Image (cartoon, rainbow, N blue to C red):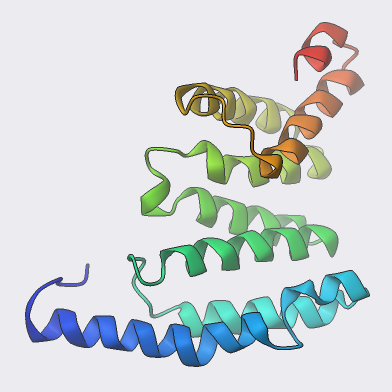
Length: 171
Protein backbone atom coordinates (compact mmCIF):
# COMPACT_ATOMS: atom_id res chain seq x y z
CA UNK A 1 0.00 0.00 0.00
CA UNK A 2 1.30 3.44 -0.91
CA UNK A 3 1.55 6.01 1.84
CA UNK A 4 -0.69 8.93 0.89
CA UNK A 5 0.99 11.68 2.86
CA UNK A 6 4.46 13.07 3.15
CA UNK A 7 7.37 12.91 0.74
CA UNK A 8 6.96 9.18 -0.02
CA UNK A 9 3.35 9.65 -1.05
CA UNK A 10 4.24 12.62 -3.21
CA UNK A 11 7.02 10.67 -4.98
CA UNK A 12 4.66 7.73 -5.60
CA UNK A 13 2.07 10.06 -7.12
CA UNK A 14 4.72 11.69 -9.33
CA UNK A 15 5.97 8.26 -10.49
CA UNK A 16 2.40 7.18 -11.27
CA UNK A 17 1.79 10.34 -13.26
CA UNK A 18 5.04 9.95 -15.20
CA UNK A 19 4.33 6.32 -16.11
CA UNK A 20 0.74 7.04 -17.10
CA UNK A 21 1.69 10.11 -19.16
CA UNK A 22 4.87 8.77 -20.76
CA UNK A 23 4.18 5.05 -21.12
CA UNK A 24 0.48 4.25 -20.95
CA UNK A 25 -1.03 7.31 -22.65
CA UNK A 26 1.13 7.06 -25.80
CA UNK A 27 0.09 3.43 -26.19
CA UNK A 28 -3.53 4.51 -26.00
CA UNK A 29 -3.01 7.31 -28.54
CA UNK A 30 -0.53 5.59 -30.82
CA UNK A 31 -1.10 3.58 -33.92
CA UNK A 32 -0.35 0.34 -32.05
CA UNK A 33 -3.25 0.52 -29.61
CA UNK A 34 -5.55 -2.47 -29.12
CA UNK A 35 -7.97 -0.90 -31.58
CA UNK A 36 -5.69 -2.60 -34.12
CA UNK A 37 -8.12 -5.49 -33.70
CA UNK A 38 -10.46 -3.54 -35.96
CA UNK A 39 -7.82 -3.89 -38.67
CA UNK A 40 -7.47 -7.61 -37.94
CA UNK A 41 -4.08 -7.24 -36.28
CA UNK A 42 -4.65 -9.43 -33.22
CA UNK A 43 -0.92 -10.09 -32.66
CA UNK A 44 -0.22 -6.35 -32.73
CA UNK A 45 -3.08 -5.65 -30.34
CA UNK A 46 -1.90 -8.42 -27.99
CA UNK A 47 1.64 -7.02 -28.04
CA UNK A 48 0.33 -3.57 -27.17
CA UNK A 49 -1.71 -4.92 -24.27
CA UNK A 50 1.33 -6.84 -23.00
CA UNK A 51 3.54 -3.71 -23.18
CA UNK A 52 0.89 -1.68 -21.43
CA UNK A 53 0.49 -4.21 -18.61
CA UNK A 54 4.28 -4.50 -18.22
CA UNK A 55 4.57 -0.72 -17.96
CA UNK A 56 1.83 -0.60 -15.36
CA UNK A 57 3.00 -3.57 -13.30
CA UNK A 58 4.75 -1.43 -10.70
CA UNK A 59 2.00 1.18 -10.44
CA UNK A 60 -0.27 1.13 -7.42
CA UNK A 61 -3.96 0.91 -8.17
CA UNK A 62 -5.06 4.33 -7.02
CA UNK A 63 -7.00 7.37 -8.18
CA UNK A 64 -4.28 8.25 -10.69
CA UNK A 65 -4.02 4.87 -12.38
CA UNK A 66 -7.12 2.87 -11.45
CA UNK A 67 -9.01 3.30 -14.68
CA UNK A 68 -5.87 2.54 -16.69
CA UNK A 69 -5.53 -0.76 -14.81
CA UNK A 70 -9.19 -1.55 -15.49
CA UNK A 71 -8.93 -0.63 -19.17
CA UNK A 72 -5.73 -2.62 -19.69
CA UNK A 73 -7.31 -5.78 -18.27
CA UNK A 74 -10.54 -5.17 -20.18
CA UNK A 75 -8.57 -4.85 -23.42
CA UNK A 76 -6.48 -7.88 -22.47
CA UNK A 77 -9.61 -9.95 -21.89
CA UNK A 78 -11.12 -8.92 -25.22
CA UNK A 79 -7.95 -9.31 -27.29
CA UNK A 80 -7.15 -12.71 -25.77
CA UNK A 81 -10.74 -13.84 -26.20
CA UNK A 82 -10.63 -12.82 -29.87
CA UNK A 83 -7.30 -14.64 -30.22
CA UNK A 84 -8.67 -17.84 -28.69
CA UNK A 85 -6.43 -17.58 -25.62
CA UNK A 86 -9.31 -18.18 -23.24
CA UNK A 87 -7.25 -19.08 -20.16
CA UNK A 88 -5.33 -15.81 -20.42
CA UNK A 89 -8.53 -13.93 -21.15
CA UNK A 90 -10.03 -15.44 -18.00
CA UNK A 91 -7.01 -14.28 -15.98
CA UNK A 92 -7.56 -10.73 -17.26
CA UNK A 93 -11.25 -10.94 -16.39
CA UNK A 94 -10.39 -12.13 -12.88
CA UNK A 95 -7.84 -9.32 -12.48
CA UNK A 96 -10.46 -6.81 -13.61
CA UNK A 97 -13.06 -8.20 -11.19
CA UNK A 98 -10.50 -8.11 -8.38
CA UNK A 99 -9.65 -4.42 -8.66
CA UNK A 100 -10.15 -2.79 -5.26
CA UNK A 101 -12.38 0.00 -6.54
CA UNK A 102 -14.88 -2.57 -7.87
CA UNK A 103 -15.48 -4.12 -4.44
CA UNK A 104 -18.85 -2.43 -4.16
CA UNK A 105 -19.79 -3.10 -7.80
CA UNK A 106 -18.14 -6.43 -8.66
CA UNK A 107 -20.63 -7.19 -11.42
CA UNK A 108 -18.72 -4.70 -13.58
CA UNK A 109 -15.75 -7.09 -13.64
CA UNK A 110 -17.76 -10.29 -13.73
CA UNK A 111 -19.35 -9.45 -17.08
CA UNK A 112 -16.14 -10.37 -18.95
CA UNK A 113 -15.79 -13.60 -16.99
CA UNK A 114 -19.28 -14.71 -18.08
CA UNK A 115 -18.45 -14.14 -21.74
CA UNK A 116 -15.17 -16.02 -21.53
CA UNK A 117 -16.54 -18.94 -19.51
CA UNK A 118 -19.36 -19.33 -22.04
CA UNK A 119 -16.95 -19.43 -24.98
CA UNK A 120 -14.65 -21.84 -23.15
CA UNK A 121 -17.53 -24.24 -22.47
CA UNK A 122 -17.43 -23.65 -18.71
CA UNK A 123 -21.17 -23.25 -18.64
CA UNK A 124 -21.71 -24.11 -14.96
CA UNK A 125 -19.14 -21.47 -14.04
CA UNK A 126 -20.77 -18.93 -16.37
CA UNK A 127 -24.17 -19.50 -14.76
CA UNK A 128 -22.77 -19.31 -11.23
CA UNK A 129 -21.06 -15.99 -11.99
CA UNK A 130 -24.20 -14.82 -13.81
CA UNK A 131 -26.24 -15.07 -10.62
CA UNK A 132 -23.70 -12.95 -8.73
CA UNK A 133 -23.58 -10.57 -11.68
CA UNK A 134 -27.36 -10.18 -11.65
CA UNK A 135 -27.44 -9.64 -7.87
CA UNK A 136 -24.85 -6.85 -8.17
CA UNK A 137 -26.58 -5.33 -11.17
CA UNK A 138 -29.91 -5.24 -9.30
CA UNK A 139 -28.22 -3.73 -6.20
CA UNK A 140 -26.70 -1.05 -8.46
CA UNK A 141 -30.17 -0.08 -9.68
CA UNK A 142 -30.23 -2.08 -12.93
CA UNK A 143 -28.12 0.39 -14.93
CA UNK A 144 -28.62 0.26 -18.69
CA UNK A 145 -24.99 -0.24 -19.74
CA UNK A 146 -24.30 -1.55 -23.24
CA UNK A 147 -21.04 -3.03 -21.94
CA UNK A 148 -23.11 -5.64 -20.06
CA UNK A 149 -25.03 -6.79 -23.15
CA UNK A 150 -22.57 -9.47 -24.29
CA UNK A 151 -22.59 -11.05 -20.81
CA UNK A 152 -26.38 -11.19 -20.78
CA UNK A 153 -26.42 -12.71 -24.26
CA UNK A 154 -23.80 -15.25 -23.18
CA UNK A 155 -25.98 -16.35 -20.25
CA UNK A 156 -29.00 -16.56 -22.56
CA UNK A 157 -26.92 -18.67 -24.95
CA UNK A 158 -26.01 -21.17 -22.23
CA UNK A 159 -29.64 -21.46 -21.16
CA UNK A 160 -30.66 -21.90 -24.81
CA UNK A 161 -28.10 -24.68 -25.34
CA UNK A 162 -29.55 -26.38 -22.26
CA UNK A 163 -33.08 -26.03 -23.70
CA UNK A 164 -34.20 -23.86 -20.80
CA UNK A 165 -36.30 -21.40 -22.80
CA UNK A 166 -37.77 -19.65 -19.76
CA UNK A 167 -34.30 -18.85 -18.35
CA UNK A 168 -33.05 -17.88 -21.81
CA UNK A 169 -35.92 -15.44 -22.26
CA UNK A 170 -35.30 -13.96 -18.81
CA UNK A 171 -31.76 -13.02 -19.77
